[in-house]
Amino acid sequence: MTDSNRPLEVACPQCRKKVEWREDNPYRPFCSERCRLIDLGAWADGSHRIAGEPAMDETEIDEMIMRAERDFQDEQ
Image (cartoon, rainbow, N blue to C red):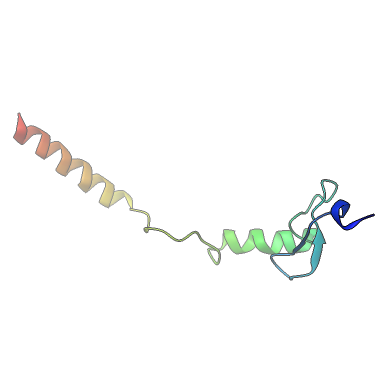
């Protein structure tokens, strides 16, 4: 197999082991089910998260809606 025909190799996001990016690898980009489940667990317990604004809780949402409704009524 020539270099141009070799599958792409990526590092497993969990253990950093080299993994061939192939359709017949059900765990890609992970090297194994174990690494995939460790990563899933990290998302579930909040260790992994996407950066951004913190989510509003219900109280903040209710206050925002009440302010908007008051502003709307004041404009009437």
